[in-house]
Length: 153
Image 1: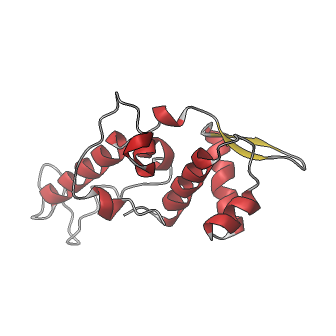
Image 2: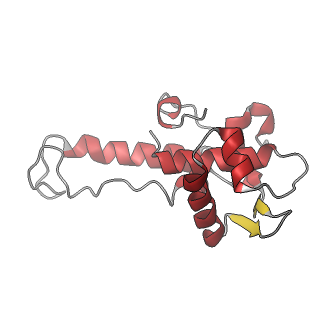
């Protein structure tokens, strides 16, 4: 499952991809269309602009645009900055496990981290808009966890 911030980032980028004219979109317009809190979304968009994912323009006709080709982006490229997994040194069972003396849950948790990262890394952003939007040279993973981890409204 994505964090709320990661979900808003993903929704915003998908919204911008669907803008056929390429004009800048104001944060308030995007927030209203997506049904998300405008202040929260503005912070997410500004953080994405500082990281280079988006460009922003001030003024009456200002707003946000994608800074790169969406066909080259994975879901991880969009949400990676917002999706911090809990450090593996924090034991799920409350003890002090680590790779050298793991608890009974440690191995599974390491697997979860790997699968989650692989799904985000290998899911082309455009695949969330349907198979017709994915460039032919990009493989889309078919994994049962994709739907449970990436939910876009």
